[in-house]
Image (cartoon, rainbow, N blue to C red; front, side):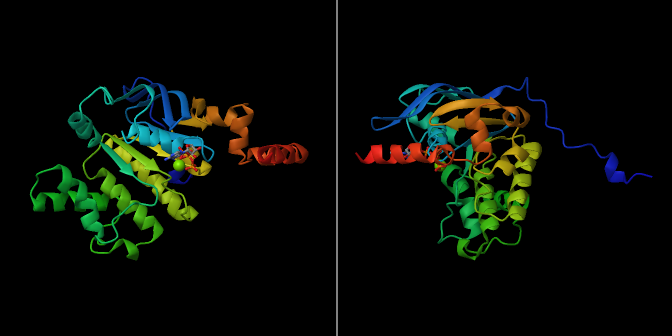
Length: 281
Ligand SMILES: Nc1ncnc2c1ncn2[C@@H]1O[C@H](COP(=O)(O)OP(=O)(O)OP(=O)(O)O)[C@@H](O)[C@H]1O
Ligand SMILES: [Mg+2]
């Protein structure tokens, strides 16, 4: 007789084809000073989707994230979050919209002088008028969701890398956001802890119906969690597609990224030297 688990269905990605968009980006151009960083980005993220933004260092991933969070004003183009035009609404409306977005920053960005629970409760204190007991219940519930129950009185310095990420997730979801942004959620973690964070991301999507935008360098993690992947290269989108589509792409730059080969490595050594000396001339 077969083992019962053999009959268990494989993980099925939900069909998101008809799901409404929660993020719509049209012709987005962003500069730092006079330097153009994003060169006309078009991207949609659908409800309940895990969208992974991938790309080499300096390709503009964090810039895109900051622009979506309303931290950086684009030069031109349009960003719609949950149907609202991010830069056509008032500051008050933008701040309200911002509260429907959760962010788990790279490195956690926890306040070192506050306990885990105090860190997690912070957005509720800042943005709601709930009484303390209600806030505590909400924060503790989120600590359970991220598997940190019982650690509420620890200080950030007493947490492991994986626990810091979990606490950052708990703080990011304490207001029940519709959309969650995560910057490099599994960077710097050992593979087992990293894969537990991947599971957490998928369970947040499945249990809470969140749409999740993940910026990551980690290919394995990207392939595991992404419904679709957006490949950025020097501020341009090379491709948006499912994991299978990205893997099967015959675009050389995408394949180089997947094989972790940097431009320098694939250049002919003489050509590389020529470019280096040209820069210094
Ligand atoms: N505050 C800033 N002022 C000026 N230029 C910046 C600033 N932040 C980023 N840049 C430049 O914008 C480009 C894109 O940077 P960005 O941080 O978005 O890349 P990234 O894809 O997130 O890279 P990484 O994987 O290294 O985090 C880079 O060339 C970077 O030097
Ligand atoms: Mg970055």
